[in-house]
Amino acid sequence: MLTVLRVHLPSDIPIVGCELTPYVLLKRADKSVITDDVTELNPIDGHFLRYKWYRVQSDKKVAVCSVHPAEQATLQCLGCVKAKIPVAKSYHCSPKCFSDAWQHHRVLHERAASAVNENGSEDEEIFGRFNSTGSNVGLSTSHSNPNLSNGSTAVYPATVTQRSGGETWFEVGCYKTYTPTADDIGHVLKFECVVVDAETKLAVGPANTLLTSRVIPAPSPSPRRLIIVGGIDMPGHLDLDGRISSAGTFTVLSYNILSDTYATSELYSYCPSWALSWTYRRQNLLREIVGYRADIVCLQEVQSDHFEEFFAPELDKHGYQALFKRKTAEVFGGNINSIDGCATFFRRDRFSHVKKYEVEFNKAAQSLTDALVPSAQKKNALNRLVKDNVALIVVLEAKFNNQGIDNPGKRQLVCVANTHVNVHQELKDVKLWQVHTLLKGLEKIAASADIPMLVCGDFNSVPGSAPHTLLAMGKVDPLHPDLAIDPLGILRPAAKLTHQLPLVSAYSSFARVGVGLGLEQRRRMDPATNEPIFTNCTRDFIGTHDYIFYSADSLTVESLLELLDEDSLRKDTALPSPEWSSDHIALLAEFRCKPRTRR
Image (cartoon, rainbow, N blue to C red; front, side, top):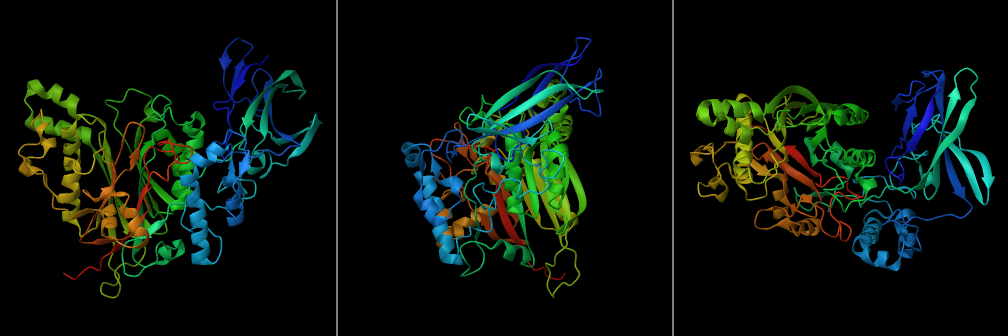
């Protein structure tokens, strides 16, 4: 006999587009306890489980607050209705909620008005995270996603099961998992699980059920626009289709997506638990990444299992080829499958893979200590240097024409480095050594081929720090305060801390733009460093750790993804949030290859 001991959901709040997978604890006839999905095709002890999902639909329609989606709305912004902004964004749960959110909310009105002025219609910017159509903004619904399956057919037919006391129960799914759709917003879902005899197909014992909270739409922030920084008298933001067809340009995205291992309620207590759950964050991150339509995508903090089971197959559907370098595991003590690393994706229609290099800083540390550190100090030296950080370097060949008539038929290669530098702020020497080691490796690649360089990642180093200075200036002043921390003597002499790559930070281009939307972006830059005021924003830290560097002798910046500012984040919040699913923001730059001169 098979018995259901317990049924529960990891999160009580269901979100549109995010799969619900109940936890079902079973007891077998031999008293052993299992959590297997016992299907009709694979019965256990002569029994299997039958699942049903129902939507509890009240005769009274319930609107959901756009700011606090777990709350019922009590007022609606008529300005949103007039501007034809998606209706889900117009609801608020109280006057105070509306007042507190006004700084963010008014941006929706301004952009709607701007879209009318520029396009003669209410269409939102083409370049954005989501396509905003209908009340459920850019989310997987039974209408927008024909492949969504909650039962035996592509779209599970909702059938009336029963009606009682002003409520109608619609059967909406017959699998263990269920993905809420736009039709479920504002409604409670019911999950039912019953043990069935494999021979008679009759239920054995009572059904086990649970009720969810009301289904909420996944919050979505205003789209981030691509701001043109190259050229003269160009429009304020870029048409996506124009970008794709522009000869010789390509886009690069760098994004630390926040590993699920680190996304804990202890670290991010200000973020709702449902918005921290991986089932929610992975869908939100995927929508954001796919929405940018970058030609090359560099992600950091990608868990090994999430790369294999989610990002690689999902991005493959959107035309991306995937490469991955997992961190080494000498320090990490957890599940080997949850170790994070660097993942690089590129569009197969835009690039082909030529070569891959993997940098393991642990191996470099071993070589360094063997060469420089006395035997008695090697253990302490390795304890300081071995931190499992890695870099992934990929050489790609462009499938589009960059050269024009001067160099017909010449191969256009691009070298892309993706790294995540050590996080510990007290290990300034280790950070600098890792960056220097990476740059020396890139110099060898540059010496072997005439190739543009891109260096992307989370460097865990603020602007003006020694690692940032080395990247941007090619050297570090011997009197730089970071060099005072060097217990192993690995940074001496300071004169060796150089490289010959002509690297420039892509986002420093905003400092050269003085009109239109570019001027607005300058206010989000630190004038002392020409870098963004922040790319990492938590309750404990706000500052810049993420960069896209490029070789200025072979590439020019055409446009940049706009930066977030405090008005872009909801009042009294930090990252991650329901709108943005990482504690970092994505950076994206469009580059044009400079014409090569004949040698």
